[in-house]
Amino acid sequence: MLVGLERRSGSFSVVWRRIRKNRMAAIGAFIVLFVVGVALLAPWISPYRPEATDLMASLEGPSKAHWFGTDIYGRDILSRIIWGARVSFSISFLAVLLSSILGVLLGAIAAFFGKVFDEIIMRTFDILLSFPDILLAIAIMAILGPGQNNLVFAITIYSLPQFARIARGAVLGEKNREYVDAARLSGESEFSILVRYVLPNTLSPIIVQATLRVAYAILIISGLGFLGLGIQPPTPEWGTDLSVARNYLRVAPHTGIFPGIAIFLTVMGFNFFGDGLNEALNPRMKDR
Amino acid sequence: MKNYLVRRLLLILPILVGVSLLSFLMLHLIPGDPARVIAGQGATLDDIQAIRDEFGLDKPLVQQYWMFISGLFSGKLKSISSQQPVIRDMLPSFGNTVQLAGLSIVVATLLGVLLGITAATHKNSWIDNLSMGFSLVGVSMPIFWLGILLILLFSVTLHWLPVGGKSGFASFILPSLTLGLPAAAIVARMTRASMLEILNQDFIRTAISNGLPRKQVVYKYALRNAMIPVVTVVGLQFGYMLGGAVLTESVFGWPGLGRMVVTSIFTRDYPLVQSGILLIAMSFVFVNLGVDLLYSSIDPRLRRK
Image 1 (spheres, rainbow over the protein chains, first blue to last red):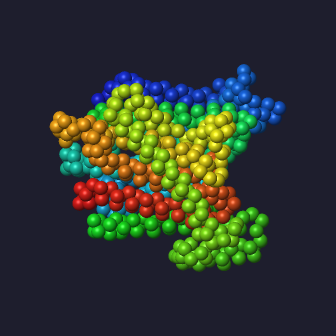
Image 2: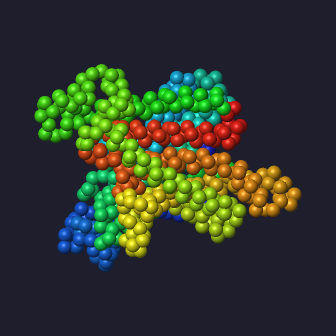
Image 3: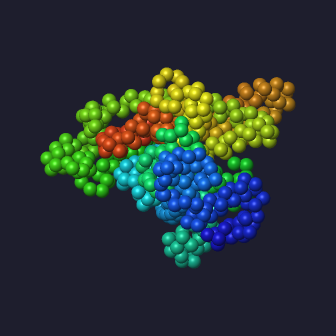
């Protein structure tokens, strides 16, 4: 990944300096690092076990013992949010990784080899994109049933078309450059030209897209959780916890607030960071 | 224009076939024997055989696909839980979703365009920063949490508006704000960018230096040109709302189609799930087509491509 950055924009440190100069991107990077840190350190920093119930302490407001209060089963909301970060991240990172690799490969093949490949691959993705917003993910979860692996699969499929489109566009822009002809004349095979020379030059929009896609993935995970189609209780997940909280808003409004803040901040962090990365990698596009 | 229309219609035909094929195949993609899946646990062999006969599950797939599509429109395809034709179960809920999305898009357009123009004409002022801050918040907001916050404020604390359900105008307000605000953020961003671009162009500078009142230039000449990309964004947002409304519907107990699909997933009412998903996807495709046609009728340059 770093190699690609170096090739495109001088050096990694240049990009890093540009990100630091951009206030939004810096805030984004800070939030992302913070939440990732929380997710990694969950076992050590969460004050309670996320699934430990205490019916005597049901729906208590924020206090010294429970900073964010407790839910209907008396579980510590802070601990559930901390562990929820782990759940959201492991799913979204894995899904975005899978869909970026697969999507980029498919999009690149479509653009580079064109004709039948292009038609079949892109028309298939057009069909997937005809299911608006969260609907495709809902349909896949309806087929597979709830569960963590199924969620990874659903979000991978959901994100594939975006990566494919971007990779396709980028490869179309690169494939008629002189260096491609030069590689071809020196006897490189088509596939090796694609993977060794063309793809590394298309990396920066893909990295930006991957960052923004993590934000979408987290929204979809929590949305499916809220609908009851995602992570199943008692596993801590922000959206799932909010759907339970929805029933107790009158008596315990705090249960409906903190998990939402967690989703919102995390998604915002990735959006800011992604936008900042975009400006740092493509300084000319600044006003878009 | 006529040629363009025909070409666009031909282009969406394979998409419609693909979308309907995917919705149809859903049932067969579920691991296990589809008849057993529909029958649920504890069904006798006779029950399973009855379902197999009713849905024609032992027939070739092509024939089953045809049964699904024709049954959907002729009313032969019935919901498992209500035993009513799915089309009769779906239409009222679909109407509710369209009403909600319709009002939400009005909210999004009015608010978004207004904010966008103000931000563009007062670039880098506090109002610009505020409206851009709003649009940044809007894209990161989980829509169902926005709904919960609005309920907490306007229903639980202030007692102004109902918590949920669909009963009279008051019950429309919170759901349409929930669905409309994030879209307003996107519309505002687009309007601002588009306005700024137009305001920098020569014909605007000419108009102003010729002594036309600034207000007239902004609202008559600039706005009309700046609205072209905004129309597309609004249209696309409306399409997205048809699918995204499911979360809002779920927060507010709104009797829409998305919510019906989700409920039917839990009751394993697969005919309703399949046809609900198909109906939403189809309307999305047609909304996009409409947006395309509208766009090319406003901006004739696009038709020639």
